[in-house]
Image (tube, helix red, strand yellow):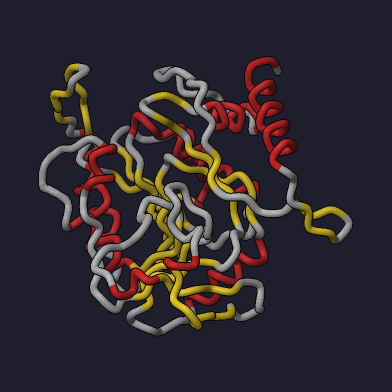
Length: 296
């Protein structure tokens, strides 16, 4: 399965870090990561045929945009994604993974079961499958966003999938999370974006179009935990700690902020028991991670 990576030369170290976390934490993942580049990324050669490098003229064409903080240089995001998809048929399943998130924990057998479910599914209206139930921003924390009575069990019965109420809407929810997705869904989203240079943060305000009746699915319970790589142009503290954990060199063109952004939670397993730490223990673990980044 193709994993479509949205990145550019400036953020290639974050793409490297993201792919590395998948290789370490989901070692049986079925993906070939399709990565765009302008300047050949030597640091990705270590992945061999797990990474497919796509040369992009648009990655080298940098456009100035005037902002309140001065002029910023941006690459052509819309053209980059559409070029990564241009040889893929609409009904093919892909894994959509931006460089701004990375894997922290995952239930590997459950993730592989979802993969087997999507590649064997022939329903044309099935559009996306999200591996997180509790998303940043509040979607799906309440059952009001879930269709009543619709439960789909994956082939090895590792996961229960639920249909969201957005099946009856013309907007695709939470398109920026890592997820399984039909090519037509991602292509349609970016074809609807303006044909001009824009800042990444502008994409949050663009409409992410889907057809009414197309079905986004979501896990009934989280099977993964992700971290945000950057926030407001700075590296998050959790991402800096992850770079250090894996022995990777941090980008030198960005500062490390005091922002800590981890999305989702899953129980820890010990002696066959599933344990969810209470809030105080979670805060302690976060403090340990921050101390580790600063002092080790």
